[in-house]
Every structure is written in C-alpha cells, then in structure tokens.
Image (cartoon, rainbow, N blue to C red; front, side, top):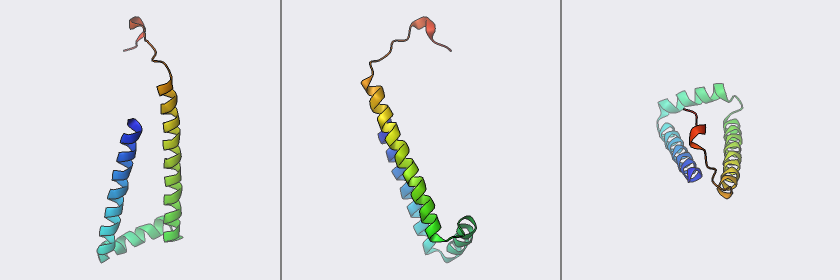
Length: 89
C-alpha cells in the first residue's frame, strides 16, 4: 500500500516537473533564465542534464525495488505481539 502511495506521489511530481518544463519552453524570458541556470549547473549541456536525471531515476527505481522486497519480507512475517509493559512513550 505504501509503495503504491510513493509511486503515485512520484508520478505526480514527474508530471509537475514536465508541466513546468513545458511552460518554461513556451516563455522566451523564462527559457533564457533557465538556460543560464542549467548552464551553470550542467556545463556539459542538455546531455548532462539527461544523464543526471537518468542516474537519479535509476537510484529511485532501485530504492523502490528495495522497498518492495522489504515490504514482501515484512508481509511474510507473523505479526509480533508487544507486551503492554514493554512500550516506550
């Protein structure tokens, strides 16, 4: 359930970023400002931005896979009873 929530949130963020990039591309002033910022951050150009984004996406996918494996492990375990006197508050 939590994995689905995280995936949904990830897709919402990705859609918002795509929308913002499209809006910036339509506005010449914003486009120039964005280009100078991107040039400072990624002097190697758009290819560099794409490479960084691809690395980040691979990391995210890897983390989601790890979460999925851990969630399956937790679901396979029997629930653990916590004695009432053993909880910390």
